Amino acid sequence: MDSFAGRWVMAFFLCGTIVATSYADMQNGMPEVRGVNLGGWLVVEGWIKPSLFDGIPNSDMLDGTKVQFKSTSLQKYVSAFNGGGQNVTFDRDIASSWETFRLWRVSSEIFQLRTFGGQFLASDGEGGPVSATDESATGRGTFTFERYQNRVHIKLSNGNYLQANSAGQLTADYPGRPGWDDHAATFEMTIVANDLHGDYQLANGYGPDKSTSVLSGHRNSFVTQEDFRFLSNHGINTVRIPVGWWIASDPTPPPPFVGGSLASLDKAFLWAQTYGIKCIVDLHAAPGSQNGMEHSASRDGSADWAKSPKYIFDSLNVIEFLASRLAQVQALNSANGPLVFVGEWVNEWNVQSASKFDYQDFGDAQLQVYDQASFGWCYWTLKNARKHWDFEWNILNNYLQLGASSTKLNMGSTYFLILSLWACLYLHHVTQQ
Image (cartoon, rainbow, N blue to C red; front, side, top):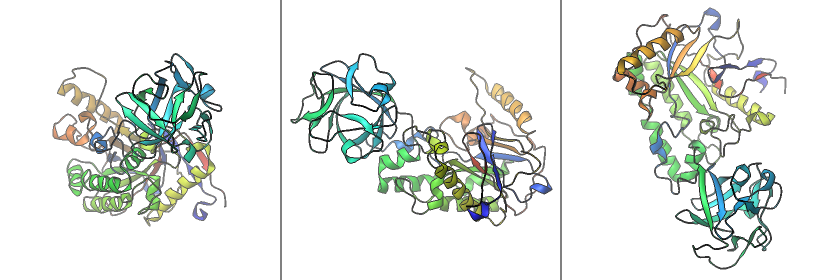
């Protein structure tokens, strides 16, 4: 961190994006950006390309999936009272937050269960009650799930099944193999939400070998040199490339993340140079997850980035790593105040049965505003399963008409690089370490 010592790293909130500005030629005036985001490429977002997850077994039980369990014998819900911190009971007729658990996936059939308060369910395996007191996931909190339709049996590694006893406690002392009738060891499982489909869910869901194959194929095909030619031909002068923090550890990032994103980023720089396109590198997924969403690679919806100074300094280390790959990036300093950058916008609106002309008119109205941004804009995204979010589809089908840019971009050989972090408003002075 020595190269950052004594310098201000300033992040400012602009349309959902925090931008830490870094551009060697800022003093000579900033050219207007007309850009497109390459979202869903080097940081996975399942809604952009849902088919990436099609081959995962038990894909409705990915990391972070929220589940509830109801005893078929007592007709009561499993509950971690007060969100965790004591033994687990059966005393609720209606399920809410205390009765909702987040899955940590170990394999397609083996899971750990995290409470609303962040503790993990665990048992010593000797027939005692199941508690929600462990602050981290361990072997004593690892369970095998056996599924039949919406019913499950939950088994410890010693072979004992969890059951609801007559005293209303969850215990790990059923020794035999239960049937699927209304039995003390049989539970109805409700999947409340399965809405996290990011890098963590994909990599951990497939496992290391398969996820490497899936992501390699995706990175090689989702964005290609031909896409850069298409963008250049349609007046786009910039691409914004979201990356995850694990890129700094490429080619062997920590599990379950998969290497290869750095090589893809380097290819993007080459394609950009070929077609006179500038690059914005966007640190989209920060260590610890900055917002608990899938695009921040959160495992279970927790947002821990701001809770630990280590995560913040790890983020700066990633920024330093990315900056070191371009000799043109010399500082992370503000100059004459922040410039306006519309980091993400889309030609979609909440109007039913809108005509093609309506979309053209709507897009034109947005462009009139965003073209006035002093730094520029980037459309979200180049490709998307939702067609009106898909820049390529909008252009090819004439739903979005760009027209001429109000400012010509100097298409010299110098890259500019913006390192942005999608997170809360944060202003930090890095001191000498």
